[in-house]
Length: 262
Image (cartoon, rainbow, N blue to C red; front, side, top):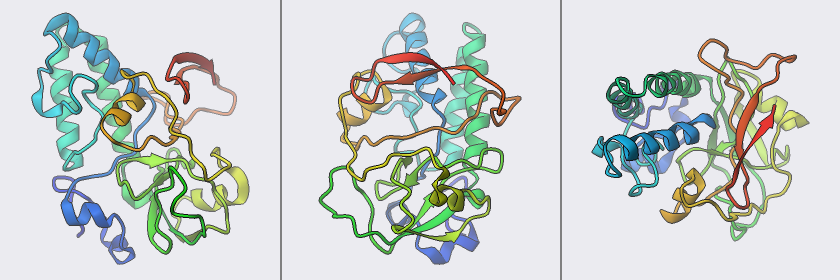
């Protein structure tokens, strides 16, 4: 089996023949799909630390990129390592911040739902886009994971050559060949149902240095657009068609956060 939850990357046995995640397989480490709430929870953890234990992270091995992030899963060796980081933060914060601790555990549950690779689609990139296009990180002929889950079978992007998380790319049916599609997500996306970008030119833009995008820019990670699936809370996986809720979004240009009725 290509790795495990304790030693990434985890690649299901039935996926091994597709040559997925070549860099991770050579060097080790795991890729992640994560919801938009991660950025908010990360910011609240940093605020809690500043108020209770100072600016130095109390959980040293979870710190990535100085004081900018705490739980962004960049450079994690495995899912097990990352879920352990979340659990340790939840235990440490619970006495002084019970609501934040509950939200960390909710985040962990959602992450576990989102990162079942047996449910992810596998799609081969067959497009003729120029490799010099800024923000494009795909190799023609290579197979890629399109993450989703049975509880939320929505297009959220591609685990591209950066092999970190999913980023939005155009769903041009002439540029993609479906290899495996257990939820039918990829077929629907290529049929025009995806909420995605329309152009291959992907702007990096500016970002608040304390935001997830700002941290990525400061640490040399290419910032591309990402959309999170519609997980609402630990009781409900999908947003029902008639429901509405207020979500926090970040401006892709300046990084400023604002609320939006979704």
